[in-house]
Every structure is written in C-alpha cells, then in structure tokens.
Amino acid sequence: MKDFKKYFSIPAPPDDVYLALTNANTIHLWSGEEAVMSTEPESEFSLWDGSIVGKNLEFDPGKKIVQQWYFGEQQESSIVTIKLHEDNDGTSVELRHTNIPDQDYNDIVEGWTNAYFGSLLEFYSEGE
Image (tube, rainbow, N blue to C red; front, top):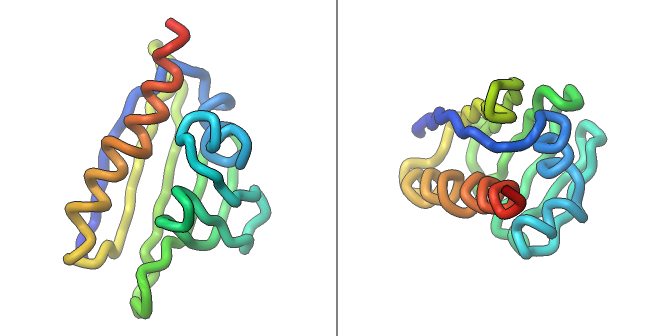
C-alpha cells in the first residue's frame, strides 16, 4: 500500500472548488462524465462512469472533503482527504490519498494529476 500527497492551485474561490467537487451537475461540467454525488455522509458516489466509486465520509463546506475509495476486496480503507485553503491565486488544494494498492498507484497518481485536478484547473482557467 502506498500514500500520495500533492498540492494543486485552482484559480477559483474555495466555495466554488468545493461545489465543483461535491455537486453532480458541476462535476459533469468539468469532467464531461456523469457523476453520482451527494454531500450526505455515508452516501456512496460514482465518478467517471463508475471508474471511481466509494463512500462519502465527512464534509466541511468550502474547506474539506473526506471519502473512502473502493478497490475490490481491500482490507484497509483507502481514504481521500481534500482540504481547500484560500490563497492569492484562488484555492490551494491539499490532497492526501492513503492506502492505494501498489498495482493501482501509478494510475491513481496520473488520474489525480491529469484527469481529476487537471480537468478542474482547465475548467477554471478557460474563463481567464
């Protein structure tokens, strides 16, 4: 199992980034894919046509999202924590993803960097 931590800078206020990460319609706008998402703790979610599935654990509007991502029959929970911090450029996003199966690590890191936050950055940068 491996852990991944990275910071991203998104040119939008934390409340907007939070909404972009937690509202199914907004996720569809920046990802181009259907999403099932709720801000109810213990609700299940699905992103990228089911490529990413899991359970929402905790929300602090505009500040923090905690999710469990499912990887088959994995014994230890794979936890994603996204913290949003206001900065001069908009939002500094602190991402921490723990207990990533070794065989999935490279795909997950690439997905976070290019597909997930790469698409979100592109979405907010288009309006500049």
